[in-house]
Image 1 (cartoon, one colour):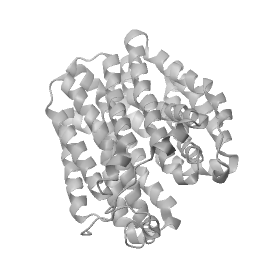
Image 2 (cartoon, rainbow, N blue to C red):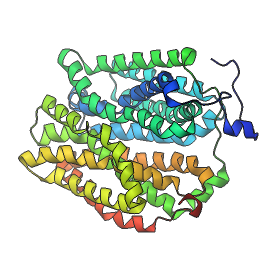
Image 3 (cartoon, helix red, strand yellow):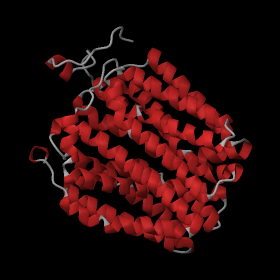
Image 4 (cartoon, rainbow, N blue to C red):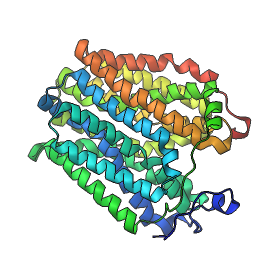
Length: 410
């Protein structure tokens, strides 16, 4: 580990090479890349593992469907608030230590959750879990790109981004395995322990990240808030997250409570349906290059919205088909979505556009959507809540016409 962190300056040397060591080819840095991907996997699965466990947690804690859905809202609010302020943290604490703090915070939150009996304490811990998880991503990406030469960034980021997709597949299987021979609390304790061990190992033996980040200035933030395209992308990103993560969060409850599936069968179907996302996300970038950003966004949001409506409406075997097709299309939003966000404002402010659009959109899609579906399940039906999400998605597609990209970013 490097002895002294590098502080940000205006020097050209720092801007080109903040790590102080020249980045190298991807194949020469696979071990640190896989290490970061492993930390990201624990970071992400800790936030979604509630979904396949929710039927059991709801029964044990005597929660209503609305209260169960609100748990994801608490994680999303904590995640979004911390992500908005992460730049200020990483400008004072080097990325390496920020990654360590994130892993420790996630681990401690999960360990405390494993022994908590109070519903209110669980809510507070889920909020803290979201905050702890959020501070990883900007520092993880900064560390990754400082280690690997720019020609290989696409491949390196693709490997790193496999963590969320693998988490979606693995979470239901892991949850079912623990529920067969133990408790959901044991699983929380195990994930928390592994997260703490990974954080400590990274601090002492991991590579990269021994430099500071830069905080966003108020002038740059104000300029983005004046852009109508920024607010449009915030809504669209919220719908993208909502039709992917938001539906995933409440799908087990919907299938078990309203459609009569067994818990194990429901979790197995959901896990298998997400398997395609591990690979199809790589292919979706090709559509962006071939069709353009606006057309790609329109096609995939329209298709996702229709499939989401059908997910809540169709009977029998058609439902199983929708369980597989809906997430396959929903995941295709993100390459086009991130490309569109990156083209709002000047290129040098790209990180600020992402750091504000993503958390605000995540509150909508990862928090408000599960809460809405939970409320609908409590007072109406889960089907109506899921269909409403699909209808809203289709209704917002005309907003895409209002997107304006910076000339230098086209």
